[in-house]
Length: 433
Image (cartoon, rainbow, N blue to C red; front, side, top):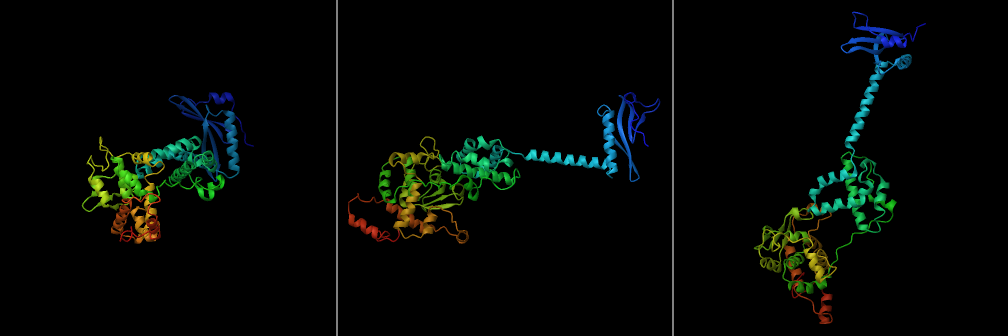
């Protein structure tokens, strides 16, 4: 029978090498030894477990005496002996455990390294995608809506933890009060979480998607987009007559915008370098177009006259008198508010579209090209090479002709108006107008 637990506490405490030697091992029994080593800083005492498995003898360190006392060393030795009885090599098992712990620690560090809050991901998204927006104002609005409505609920959450419940908490309070803002907030959250998924900050489905998902939890559908208020095209000639009586950069810019069916940003950002008066053409570069494609605009005679009547104040066509910088985004809208409250500059594009549909025979694709709309049919877009420029020139001249002739007051010349209604495309010997 093997003897165990041979050492006393005093023997353990006083263990040291014999005189003239540097190392001494004291047997406690059943493979457990206390090894005393003479070092430069005195005697170091460590526990050693010696075992033999498959004919191979191994010495395994258990730990220093100042950390593992006699009782703990004996308990550990019993555990190691039990492993050996099960055919497990204690050294191999410890190595595997260390590897496993190291891999877990590395995985934890990797997760911590890629852990991103929603607010942090929003900033990363804006850094990557913000440059595609035409002005800083849009990026600021993008961030501001999320800061106001999303951040209080999910701003500090790890994007990997955000789920549908969080989205409901964000959107439910604002869906009825400010539905359009709620729609935009949801879409922006979806974009940020989509970026987070592709960036490996989260995985799985996007909890912010609407169709067959959040719409089921929140009920109903997202509010349809509200269209810009437009002046009925029948009233446009009278308005243009009134507008021509005003003398200001804003009035000139607004009239030019209506004559060209251009967007506000395209008009107020127009530069003289884009204008070719000789060929009556305005070429808007792709960087300033919504569809990011260069757009040639045929200029009618009245549009050319407006340009010729302007003073060159810097690079911008409709620059301010003092600084030469372009008019603000609100300049045209403020002018409209004073003469036609409720009508928007963008709405005149709808007036143009309605006029072209109801009073002319111009093909729809010519009208859509004049509005610089993107062709949604991919097959048609692939085969479309030209920009129908000369056809559009005729269209815009007809539009200018219509705008130049205010209709009679209500009740006057009823017969003529009825005749026009019966033949909407007929005009003084011309074809389409």
